[in-house]
Amino acid sequence: MASWLHRIGLLSEVDRAALAAYAQAYGRWVQAERAIAKMAEKDQLTGGLMIKTSNGNAIQNPLVGTANKAASDMMRYAAEFGMTPSARSRIETEGEQKADPADRFFG
Image 1: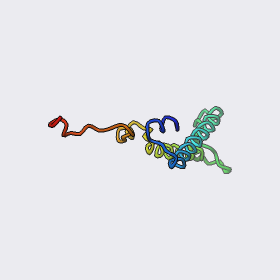
Image 2 (image 1 turned 45 degrees about the vertical axis):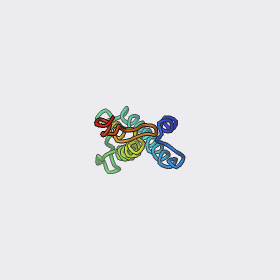
Image 3 (image 1 turned 135 degrees about the vertical axis):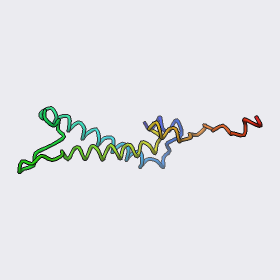
Image 4 (image 1 turned 90 degrees about the horizontal axis):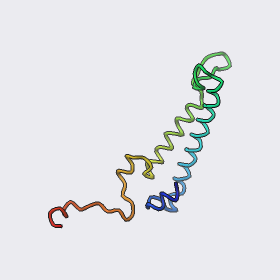
């Protein structure tokens, strides 16, 4: 991702922390989703989305919250770097110039 973002002018050295935060959120999301999938193999009823507490109550698997938070963080950082369709539609990269509306009349 870094080489692609740099090539299109959306990444410089000052963006290192933001890109690292994106990568960390992505890694956390993948790790949580893999753990949920592994739990789902043994849990046909809830697919790993629920767990039982020590006193037998069913609650949401904490990994679901971890995965959701990481996905949310990841998407927030992704938008900052233009890595979503809607974000790309709002960004200009180096070398890209918008047409001047006046060119229609004077061009």
